[in-house]
Amino acid sequence: MDDYSESRRAGDRLAAGHGLDDPFAAAIRATRMATIVTDAAQADNPIIFANDAFLKLTGYERDEVIGRNCRMLQGPDTDRQAVQALSAAIAAGEDINVELLNYRKDGSTFWNALHVSPVRNDGGEIVYFFGSQLDVTDKKTAEAKVREHRDDLEQVIEARTRELTEALEQKTALLHEVDHRVKNNLQLISSLLLLQTRRVPDPDLKSALKSMLGRVNAIATVHRRLFQSEDVERFDVSAFIRDMVADLMGSAGRDDIEMQLDLERVDIPAAKAAPFALVVNELLTNALKHGFPEGRGGRIFVGVSRLDGEFRIEITDNGVGMDKQANGFGLTIVQLLCQQLKAKCETTDAEPGTRVVVLLPVNGAH
Amino acid sequence: MLLAIELEHLIQEVGCHPLGCAMSSGEAFALAQQLHPDLALVDVHLSDGPTGVDVARKISQDCGGVALFMTANVKRLPDDFAGACGVIGKPYSEHGVKTALVYLAHCLREGHAPGPTPVGLTLAPAYAALWGLDQTLGRTA
Image (cartoon, rainbow over all chains, first blue to last red; front, side):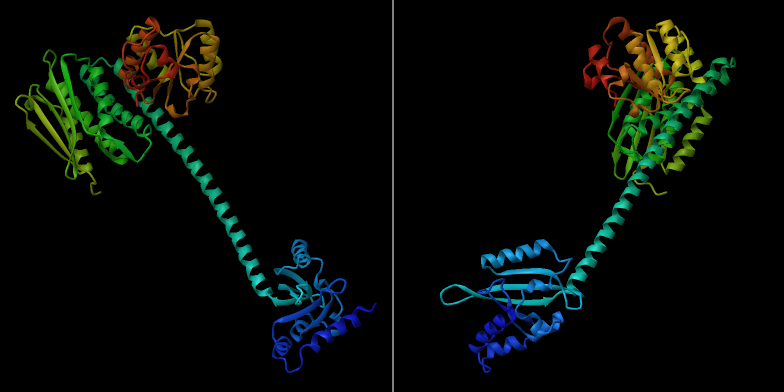
């Protein structure tokens, strides 16, 4: 059987029902939307009508498409799954919208947004399929570009994230290494001072070395505390004072002096920790050494509290009083470091004894 | 070496007897096997690298001794302290070490702790339990 002439006749029969004055037929023939009609009654559902827009889109002549199945537009890169979905819909007699890569007569490709729907007669039987084709190549290309860009971008982000993660790991390792070295070196300095202190016979020199050892220990206590906390930027003043007091009182071995602590939880920036620690060390050592000469017991009070915009650190003893306190260098250290910390340090008579109050600005200007 | 010499002074001052000091993990292990110390003070970083953890484990497993870490890297210790009884964090003070040694000597002699752990000493969970310490008291933050 001749498919072409059979389809031609089917096309004629279709046209016969729609004269030249039929506005719907005229619209289909003239529309810019590529449109075909296939004959469901014939084997393999051949094309029996194709409008000019279809011929223009595909590059075929009319007599090259009439009588053929529209799979003639498919090619090697057409998505098989989309084709199967199309065949399944046609076999089931359902509408379908599908986007297919199609081939023109000259072999060039275009993206075809294909709509196919069955046309039924009065008896409900499918007699034709109506197909319309829209060239969506531009949209597809744009989509592909967006996808490509997104993939590129994701790769860039992934690479950058990897770099940053590695950099952070390196930085953390470096921080641990530096922390380790600082602590070991402080240990070395304190052991050196201690070794020499043991060997020096001169009591004045021994006392000076011990004072220096106390200062190094204060800084060491700061570093022990700093990296123990989760936040390496902040320094817990009260926890530090508890450590310092335990250490100082322990090494002083003065059971006749009672310590009273009233410590509110207060944090200062880590950068201020060392000077602050040295100030507290001097004041505590002064109170211990000079407030209470051997044989005179008493009480030392240390308080930390938060005032408006300031931290208040008070160290009060009920010892022999300020006139007899004569640690020149220690007080110089206190003055200089308070200046550095923008802190106020006031010494008053506690009758009996000495009261020193340090007022440290919470967010001190630098 | 300086630190070791200084530690020997401290050990003597609290009434203990320093038996010897070692620089490398090999020396440390040989010394521990030969001398059977009650307590071995072990830094994590020895002359042959970060081998102190292995040394502590060997001392507690093979020599029946008790190890105590002295390290600036407290956070890097394994959770079980490698069988050691605890750690003194560097930098330590003279008083801190002495107090810790007196405290541990009491624990080792009597089998229970004389009180909460002193500042600067952190006990391994297993030893804190062994010496009858409430975990919350046994840990110094």
